[in-house]
Image (tube, rainbow, N blue to C red; front, side, top):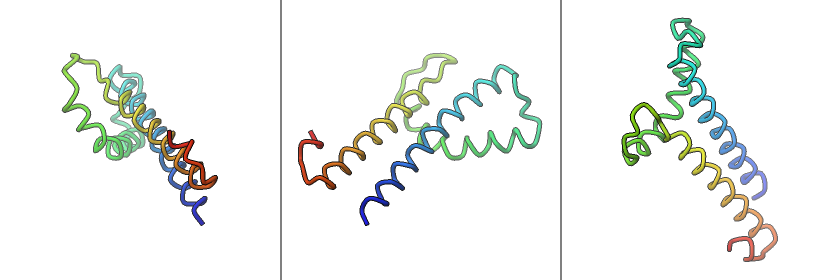
Length: 104
């Protein structure tokens, strides 16, 4: 019963990692004018990515110093999500094997 829960949590974290990466790429392409955000479908995709990533990116942006036009908050969030994935995988391994060595 515990294995599917960890699988679901890890898959959700992986999907969020990809959403953050796609949002960063989309934002970069839109700022350089490569994609036209006046197109309704393109705008809808950008709005969706903004809505799911902005609640996590905003606190990081508030903490980071101003680097001008360079936004490093997606990189920080990607590292945090990847670290969370590693921690959850280690907790899963420790629970399933009963060994505490995975938690160290």
